[in-house]
Structures are given as C-alpha cells and as structure tokens.
Length: 130
Length: 364
Image 1 (cartoon, one colour):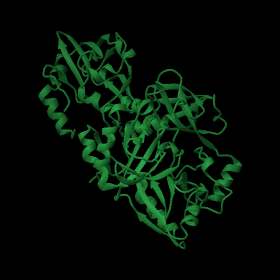
Image 2 (cartoon, each protein chain N blue to C red; image 1 turned 45 degrees about the vertical axis):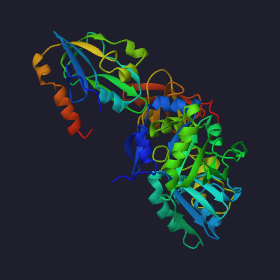
Image 3 (cartoon, each protein chain N blue to C red; image 1 turned 180 degrees about the vertical axis):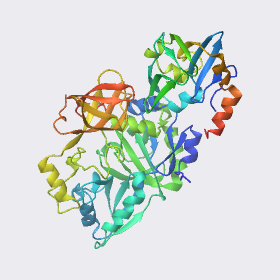
Image 4 (cartoon, one colour; image 1 turned 45 degrees about the horizontal axis):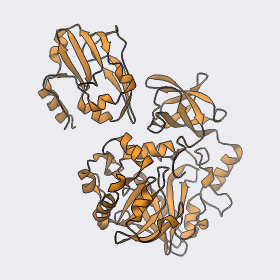
C-alpha cells in the first residue's frame, strides 16, 4: 500500500504539495514512483519560470516509462532540487523527502484549497482501481 | 480472467508485482528492475517462463513438416539440441519466432506466450498432408529460466549429471532435485544459463529447492521488466515489438536462421527475392549520445527526413544510457551512422552500433 502522508495535499496526476506560507514544495507521490519504478532521469523546470496549474513543467524518465510532471498549482518556480540530476533514484527511495522536485511561490490560494487532502487522495487511489 | 502459472503463489509470496501479460498474471518486478538486471548479469536469477507455449510434434513426418514450416534447418539438429527459428507466412511476414528441440521420440516446440493459440492454429493448418500429431503441453508443464554466470554452479548442486558437459543450445534429460526433466543451455539474457522443463505439479518443489541451494549466490526471482532490458541489451528480437507479420526475417537481421539450401519451405521464394534485391529497411541498434531514452514508436530521422520507427527502446542498466532497436531505410543502416530520434523530450542524437549493445555477457 502506497504511503500517503497526512500533512500533504495531492493532485489527480499524483503530485504532492507541502505548504509553508506562500511557498509550495512539490514532488511525486509514493504511488507514482512505485508505478514508474527505477527512475533514471529527471528534467527539472527552470527557476524563475511562471507556470499555470496543470502545465507540464518537467519530465521523469524511468527505465520502462516516461511521465510528465504537472504543476499542481499556478505560480513561479523559485527553487529546484538539482541533486536529482545526479541521483534521480532518490525519488524512488524518498519521494516525500530528499526526492522533492521544485518549490513554487503560488499565486492563487483558491487553487490550493481544491487539491485533495490525504483522505481524499487515498480514496482516489482506491477508486481508480489501484 | 487471466490464467496463473504453476508458480503463481510462490511468486506472489516473493513480492512479485503482478500485471496481466499474454493472458497470464505475471510479475513485472520484484525488488526492482535495476537490481534484478544486475543480479542476472553478475550472479543468477530465476524467471518463470511457464506462460510460454509448449507443443510436441511427433509422427513419421515430424521432421519434414517442421522443415516446411520454419526457415531454419531442423534436419541439422543433433539429439537434445535446440534451434532458434522464425516461422513465416507465405508473404514472408513472421508468424512467430520459436525454439525447437530434438528429443528421442518427438520434437518439442517453444512458442511466445502471446502467440500460443494463433501459432497452434497455424501449425495445424499447415500440417494437412503430413503424418504428424501436434500435442499441446502448455498447461501440463512448468518452465523456468535460470540465468546468470553462476547458474551452472547453483543447478549442479541439484543433480549428479555433469552440467558442464552441456554445450550452448544443447540439452540433457536429467534428474534435478529428484524430478525427471529436460534442461538446456538456452536463455534470453545473453548470460550463461539454463531452461528447465518439467511437470507442472512439481513447480513448488523445484522453486523451493532452487532458492534453497542458491542462497549463497543470492539467487533472486526476476520479473518481466528486467527480462526485457536484458534481452534488449543483446539485440534479441521481441515478437510484437521488433518482429511481427509485417516484418520479414531478412530485414530483421535474422537472415542467419533462414536456410535457402534446405528443401522448400513456406516463404522461401519471397525471402530469397528480398535477400537478393536487398531489403528496403533494416532493424538496427541505436545508442543514445548523451541523455534521453527512446521509446517504441518514436520516429527516427536524418536530415529532416523520417527514416523509420523505434520498435524497442529503454534505458540500458548495464550501459547507463538509452538504447533502441528500430527499422531504418536502406542507405542509412551502416554502423557509425549518426541519426536522431524524436522522443517525448525532443530530438536525441543516436549512433548505429553493431550488436550486441552489451558486450561483456557470459554467453553471446
């Protein structure tokens, strides 16, 4: 069973969001990393880029599959996890910690409200047939 | 409802993540694709390949029938020897690629799982006029592949017969862990290793014994994910990806298993014409220069022109870079030729290399 931390928010495309003031740290969920398995390459968004919710802002390549990273909120990219370029497998081993992908200054608190909480995401995983 | 192989319970207990594959519930991975791939390259791994189709062909015309049916020359087989061969439609397109063993009172044919039903229908249709019997043994038998440089030393602990005496693509009727079975030095990984064929009801016993005696070598179960990366690093064709009814053996680089000097066989004249006129495209090995991972159906280009498509593509765990197979129009197929592949992340520079991609395997 995939790990779903209580304190995070979640998107339908399996990104997680950790909120601190107006900053949102994002990554992909334990479920998503498990589905992709063996991640070997991450294309990170550029710092300073203005993004809209659901924009493709990066690409995650695993041995057998490729997946886009969608921004769960609108805003501006203020920091990216450069360590992932050298060790992308960190996303597999620690998806909610060292495997974080980017930090955004989010523009619209209303969007954040609409993200799923842990209970809703667990329900989403269950009903999606996973 | 997907079928289960005789090893289903053992595989689930070992942590296999099950997916539907060719009508069966099969493990895509256990501890992780990369680790499993390394295990086979460096030590020894076990693949459940019971989902493959298995048939016996017997009767006085068995040899004549098989030699009419397939492109390689079955008449060259010594007792207990194995033969890799395409089986073609009259058009030259490939029905399947098979392994054929010569056994004392029959030939034993191993079929790709996804093609089992189709192949058996095709074989029975072609058997008209031949005195042969085709017997489906798929459900009655279990099949394991034990692969890796340490496969022999592990298996040797379970039998008194000398496994070192079995040559590449040869086999032996033996008793392993007290079970009568046929084993052969064959596989789909490039590493030394064996395939084991035995009664389905002995599945649990053999599985347990293998993991017991292989503990020292860290023997591990291997999923379909690593099976694919291992075979791709060797340029072993996968039916449904690299070869199918729209490809012929000559353009697929399988001309070495098409024997024009044997008696007439299905598609002989068509394939001879392709060979003489040179195929219009060829399956080539493409190695990524830099980063990027090609995937099936990505378009291969040069000078802005589309030359063909990727048929298999992956990150190579051994080479630590992207590799692919794909068909490329003639004129662009020499090794060293630099091409581009349009991937999800944009154009990626690739170079045509000679097979195999991975050159350190313990058996080629």
